[in-house]
Image (cartoon, rainbow, N blue to C red; front, side):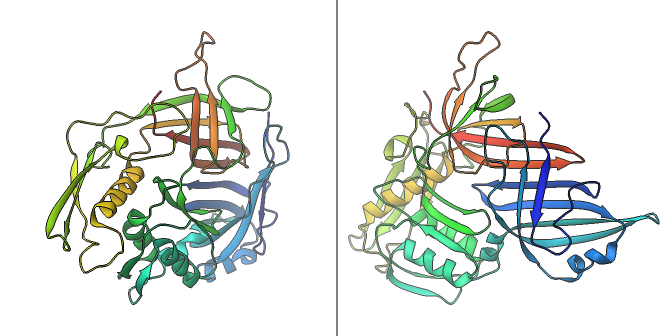
Length: 373
């Protein structure tokens, strides 16, 4: 079925681009970081859009969708984006082509630094909430963490500081598989992933079924080629306990953490340690956690970050603008003989890419899971 593409933007002149002027549009968002987008259009009235070239880092909101959709939402959520690159191409004597590229509003986390900050006996979740509030322009949904720390900021972008330095310290009994991402370019999430949460699962299949999303030639990938570099084989945590004057070591793997699962079974741990990670947060009484508990918590969080994407499912599908990342998904695949495929089960939506090119619309999805059946 042909899906008529619609695009709404709050910037002058961009509201009615859909038609002969619009050449291409794409929007990619994932759990890995900031969303990316691009827009290409042609016009015979270039002065109407010259403000897009003159303005620096223009922020706007946009919503894309379709007027024909029987299986899901007809429009995406409102996206807050920023223009980072503008190009004006004079094509012959009759028309001008504009190319706009940018990211979501979460890029402001990378344009901010917390180098002069200092926190004394604060929870990691409180520190993250304070930093997001200081950046401005973003809302937050932050789950409370356990343990208090005395930390200092550093001269790196705040987004990288949260991901590389604060996220490994995040811990709670409710979940160890912590995530840090920006939803719709506006809302910062800092919370443990829950494959059973997030509402009713989206339903995907590779056969026609009323009310289901149809995957075209889905590809299932099990990838362990970068297992050592991604710390997804098994890791060893090591730190010096100044109070007891002793060196503590602990192996951390899939069977050492109480992770959230949506199916039975777990990935197999490797027999050999892939990397030793040194933790020094206990020195100088920087936390109220015991050294062995801190070591276990940090190890489980690091393992959760890097060991989650053992399985990936990628596929093209009909244009579906309402699919969101971090949504639980149930996949029901069948082989050419209509027998159930082994990949049938529960997944999580990791990446969604929406494409429009000269009248053709498609959606590309990547699902992930960390468990084996």
